[in-house]
Image (cartoon, rainbow, N blue to C red; front, side):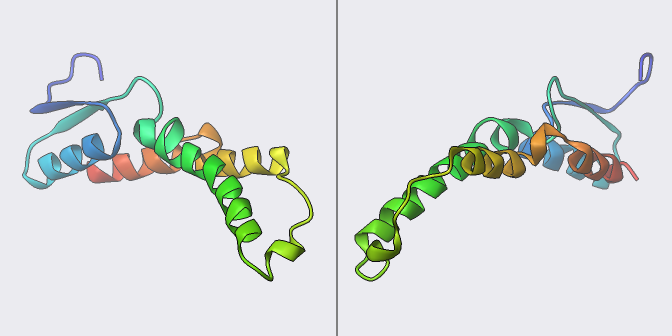
Length: 108
């Protein structure tokens, strides 16, 4: 990419950056996307999705313990390794291959 010229340079490959790049290209301009970390952004890897995945297991257990009939079936606690594994799967194990291919497809 060094020495190339683009109409628009998008800083950040999170959801907004991806959409901006797509719309720029659809509008007939060229775009380069610059991302320091992983394509998909903060929400996909460090904030929204992994955090919600971690919290959901505890919330589901707490809710089950409040429902008569289900409460009696709940005998154990959370499996920490399974909770973290669920979080990791929601963050695509911190690999952005799929997101990168999608972003590259916008340029075609």
